[in-house]
Image 1 (cartoon, one colour):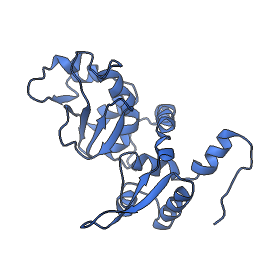
Image 2 (cartoon, helix red, strand yellow):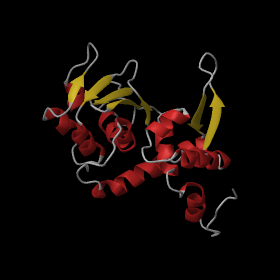
Image 3 (cartoon, one colour):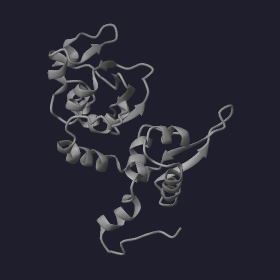
Amino acid sequence: MPRRSYDQYCAVARALDAVGDRWTLLIVRELLGGSRRYTDLHADLPGVSTDMLASRLKDMERDDLVLRRRLAPPGAAFVYELTPRGHALLPALGALADWGAPALGERRPTDAVRAHWFAVPLLARLAHHFTDGTGGTNAGRVVGVVGIALDEGEFHVTLGADGPAYGDGPAERPDVRLRMDTATCADVAYDRLSLAEGIASGRIAVTLPEGMADGQVTA
């Protein structure tokens, strides 16, 4: 299928040529957490048809947003992952999440939800809370990996010199683990509740490794 274009000499139009189609940015959201198999992508994009997902992935390969590679044995499955150009869309997705937050409201009965869908808007909130610009927390202890546990699943956020990133599933050795319900996670993610307020009110339960005091994450 030939590439569709707005045929406008404008950076916004050029960007939308590549990512303006339905489902494209949500595929990017999924792959920001790491490489995924086709079946995993389809499972976490409820509502997308198999034909549409396959078509979008081909378009994204063509536009250097994703690449497809085969895992080494014994897995030998194909996975999709973002290219550096695809990863560069993270700030755009964060801005879109902030812009769309006022329209979110209460969860509707028909709304699907996955835990890691909160990861992108949470990145900036967690980075602000845990780092002071030099890699340490505001209480002086380095927090590099934050685990987030919801009833719907777990994901983790990595805070490093290259900027925050997230991964799907639990972290092997998180520096701190936060457990909360979906409503609380949404409030923190969309800046309606600070992390410190959530911890102080008991809406967020904190699990710390040995030798780390509560005050080091509540300040």
